[in-house]
Length: 149
View 1: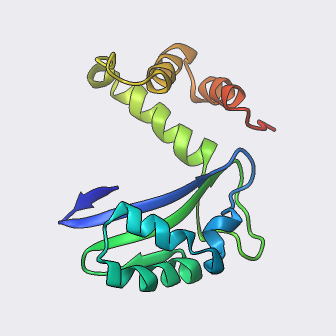
View 2: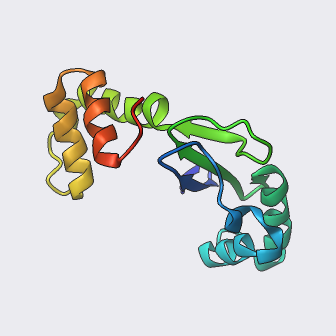
């Protein structure tokens, strides 16, 4: 969640090793899981929560003057089946390529990373040691248990 122009941008992300998808708890309005999540996060007044949840169940997006809320899925491949998420990010093409590019083009500013968690430090070290995005992808994909085919 971050603020840009005093507007909150909240992303609810479902992360998968396989194809992008949203699990049933996030797509079934009867369970009211989105209402509970939105109340817990607290970015909306209570009287806006039901309308926002309805919009998220129907469109995977909600926007008002205060915030934008989006549901996305991160996975190995896109999913075009009915009911699949509208906004999908792919591990290789979107997420890991961004991380690799960011670390390798800004290695000087990112070299002071001893305060990062283990995963961040390991990703940085892999980006610096593998020598190419393809090698970085292979190493991280294996570590994450992704099907690299």
